Structure formats: structure tokens, C-alpha cells
Amino acid sequence: MALEILQYQDLIIISSLCGIIAFLTTYLAMPRLIKKLQEAEIVGKDIHKPSKPEIAEMGGIGILLGFIIGLFVAIYLYPKLQFTLIITLLVILLVGMVGMVDDLIRLSAKEKLILLWFAGLPLIWIAPPNVDIIYLFLLPLAVTIAANLTNMLAGLNGIESGLGAIAMTSLTASCIIMGKYDVAIISMAMLGALLAFLIYNRHPSRVFPGDVGTLIIGATIVVVAFIGRVKIIALIVLIPNIIDSLLKFYSAGVMERQDHSPTEVGEDGKLIVPDGGFNSLIRSVLRRPMSEEQVVIIIWLIGILFGSVGVILSYVLKSQII
Image (tube, rainbow, N blue to C red; front, side, top):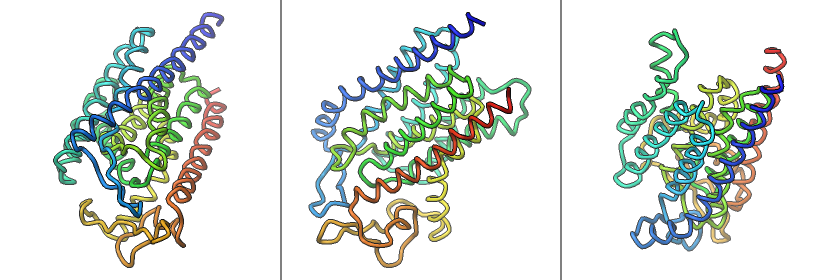
């Protein structure tokens, strides 16, 4: 028992260390990355500002870098989890590569779905024993769906990285409460990288995550969900993204990004919902003109609400296990 407690303490320390190292790596890398992206003219217009400034795109590379370094530390410090962490690293790297390609050449929705499914395939190597073929098929499909969900609720300064950090905080807390300390290593590494990125991505944003940043958030949630057997909690933390996607699908069906009418900006700098077009969680919040910061905070609060429900549920599930 004493040995078991010591092991849990070690895992919590390793998880925390991975989160700190991921944070520092992303935080220190971002200024140079932003400069390089601007020099390479990999930029996008911040359409929610009256002046429409050009902002560095594909900043999610910094998130990916921090996450990778954080997991490298875990692989070195906790060899018992080496294989699982390597598979996790492979999946997130592949999803990140799909995001990079999409950022650079704009994949169609069908192409992105197919590539994301293949990116999630390595997860079958760490699937539970004696599962059927349907379960194995659903693993990469879950990666595809979740990655797209976190990619869709986007467009405002800090909204993606903030929601991602909230989801990772909820999953980390839930895993620790349920005694799944080893899985917390993965969520802590992503949490650290996202918090560092948020410093540069919050309003007024100096960098956008791009698809390379948004896709890996959803993929990480799925990895934690299946490895840690916390699928219900992961589903709950994704509810804001699910609501957003359902509103868009119900109002406009399947649409390519370029067909979307962007939210408009008034002369006073406040966001306004354009006449017609699709519905979304952001536009549902915009019942009246609001500043971009206000909208993002409201969406974050919605994320915190469902994240808290996930944490509370972890207590209930823990008591049932006991």
C-alpha cells in the first residue's frame, strides 16, 4: 500500500513537471515562432477588429512543440508508460501534420476527415484486449470527430486555446480524482502548452492557432478519454463544441469554411450577427452587439460549467468503483 501511494505521488510530480516544461517550452518558443511566421507571410486577417490587422497564423506549432517536449520528459521519467506515450505522441503529431497541410493548402472537408481518420489509427495498438472490430473502427473515428469539433468553435481571440485549457483542466482533475494518475500526464502536458499559448492568443491576439492548433486539442481529449476510460467525462467537456456544431449543421448543413459569412464588426468595435447565414454558439450568445472579449468570456464560462459537471461526475464514478 505504501509503495502504491509512493508511485501515485511520483506520477503526480511527473505530471506536474511535464505540464511546467510544456508551458515553458511553448512560452519561450512563441515570440520567435511568431516572428518567423510573419517573415514567411503566414498570416491571417483578424476580421473581428475594425482595422483588420494581419496576425501570424499556424501558431499551434508552438502548442505542438510544448506538448512533444513535455511527453518526452514523461517517457524518460516513467518508462512503464513508454509505449502508451509514444502512441499518443504519434497520433497527436499526425493530427498536427494534417492541420499544417490544411492551413497551407486548404483541404476539402472530405479530405480532412479521411486524413484525420488515418491519423487516429495508431490508437488501435493500445486498445483494450478482446474488443471487436467496431470498437477498433470507432477509435480513429472519435479522433476525427473530436478534432473537427474543437476546430469548428473558433475564430475569436483566445476562444480555442481557452476552451482547450478548460477541457484539459477538467480532464486532469477527473483523472486524478479517479486515480488515473498516469493518464493525467497527457492532459497536463497539453494544458501547460495551451496556457502558455493563451498568453499570446488572448485579446488582442498576437498569433492564431490555425488548424494545427485546434485539431490537436480535440485529438488529445479523445486520447485521454480512451486511455483513461473517461469517455463520458470527455463527452461532457466537449458539449459546448457539440452544441456549436449542431447549430451550424441544423441551420446551414455541411458547409466549406469559405462559404461561411463572418460575424461583422460595428464602427464601435463590437461584434454583430449578420443578416441570414448560419447559426452557432457564438452567434447565439450575440443577442446584442458585444465586444469580442465579452463573447469569449461567456463561451469560456459555458466551458467551465460543463467542465465542472465532468469533475463532479468523476467523484460519482469513483464512489461507484469503490
